[in-house]
Image 1 (tube, rainbow, N blue to C red):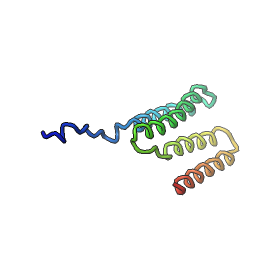
Image 2: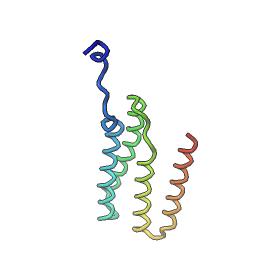
Image 3: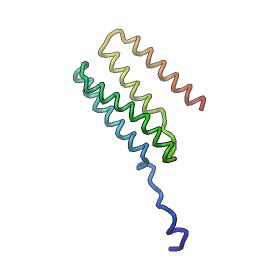
Length: 116
């Protein structure tokens, strides 16, 4: 082993980047939250888990910038919001309101990605 190899830190797998680990937590939180919402539409634990998941969205973006580990994609936010709106459209009728919000969310995320 020469000096160059000894001094170089080991490259971390992209799956173990801090923003990705926070993203994994968000996926788990969303899955548990949506199961709770399907069981009982008035579940307050759902609201707390979903809110915490969106707080983690800000944390993973901050971690990505601080640790220079890429940038977080908008896909997870889009999917979690889409799941919420689809479930709410089934629980509360008129579903046209929620489906219109879903179309607005998809369009705004598409414009954001197109702009950047």
